[in-house]
Length: 109
Image (tube, rainbow, N blue to C red):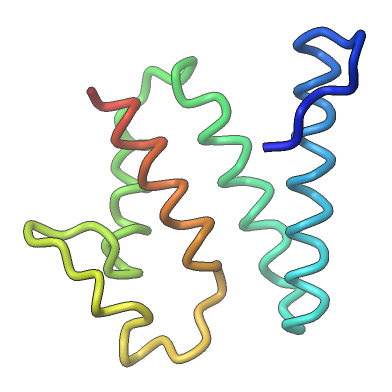
C-alpha cells in the first residue's frame, strides 16, 4: 500500500490508501470495460475494511460463498484452477480476491 505523505498521521495514510484503491479499481473497470464491477469492489472493500466491527456471521458466510464461487476457497487448495473454466473473464480480479481471502482468514484466526 502507498505510504502516507510525511507529516500525516493514520488518517492521512488511510485517505492515501483509499485514493490508491479507488484509482486502481476505476482504471481496471474502465480498461476492461466492466463498469458494473465498481459497486462490487467498493462494497467488498468497505466490508473487509470494517470486518472486525461486524458481529454478524452472515457477512463472513457471504464472503466465503463469493470465494467458493471463484474457486479460491475449497477443502484442497487449487491454485491451478484460476480462472474457473466457466469464468473466462471474471468480474473481480484475481489479485483482489486473493487479498480478500487473506483478510478473511486473518479475521477468522
